[in-house]
Image 1 (cartoon, protein in one colour):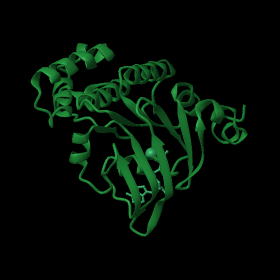
Image 2: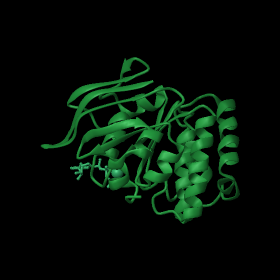
Image 3: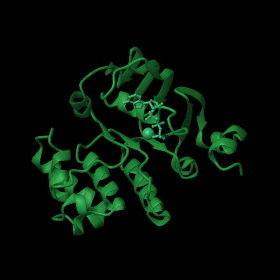
Image 4: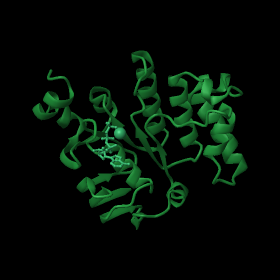
Length: 235
Ligand SMILES: Nc1ncnc2c1ncn2[C@@H]1O[C@H](COP(=O)(O)OP(=O)(O)OP(=O)(O)O)[C@@H](O)[C@H]1O
Ligand SMILES: [Mg+2]
C-alpha cells in the first residue's frame, strides 16, 4: 500500500531522516518505535505531505506522493493525527468532526461515519455540543482520532496517541486502534509505549537518529535483546 524508499528529509541544513525505507501492506498495523528526536514525527509529516523529501521515493498505491500537497494526500486516503491532539478549541465536538469530512461530498457517507465515530467513542457523542478546548486530554485525543476517521482514510497515521493518558485510557485507546484496524483501516502507529504498541502491531520498525536500525514482526522485535534493552525497560 505504502512503499518508502531511501528518503532523506531535512530541516534547513539539519538532516532528520537518512535513507529511510519502510513498507506498509494493506490491513496491517505497523508501529514505529524510537527515542525522542529519532525522527518518528518527521516521517509521518513526510508521508502526509507536510514535509518534502530531498531524495528518495514515496509510493502510495503505486503512485508517487512525495512533495504532493497535504490536501491531495488526504483526498487519496491518508489521514494524520498529529502529536499533541490539535483540535479546534473554540469549536464544538460536532463541528470538529464535520471539519474532518470537509473534502467529502457524500452526505450519506458522512452521516454514516458520524455514527461510526460516535459508536467508537461514546464519550464524544455525549459531549457533541461541548467546546473542544474544554474536553479533557483523553477526550481531545479521541476527538483528534475521530476527526481523522471522518475523512474515511484507508491509511491512518497516529502520532503518540497514548501520550499523557492514564493507564486505563491508554488501554481503551489501544483497543479502539485495534477495532479501527479490524474495520478495514491500515495503521501506522508511532509510540513511546513500545510494549503496548508491539502488543497490537503486526510489524515494527525501530528508528534511531534518523535511520531505520531494525525491523521485523512484532514477535521478533518483542524478543530482540536490542529492543528489550532500549525500549522495553530491559526485561
Ligand atoms: N521544525 C523543525 N526545525 C528544525 N529541526 C526540527 C524541526 N522539527 C524537528 N526537528 C528535529 O528533527 C529531529 C527529529 O524530530 P522528530 O520530531 O521527528 O522526532 P520524534 O522521533 O518524533 O521525537 P519525539 O518522540 O520527541 O516526538 C530532532 O532532532 C528535532 O530536533
Ligand atoms: Mg514526535
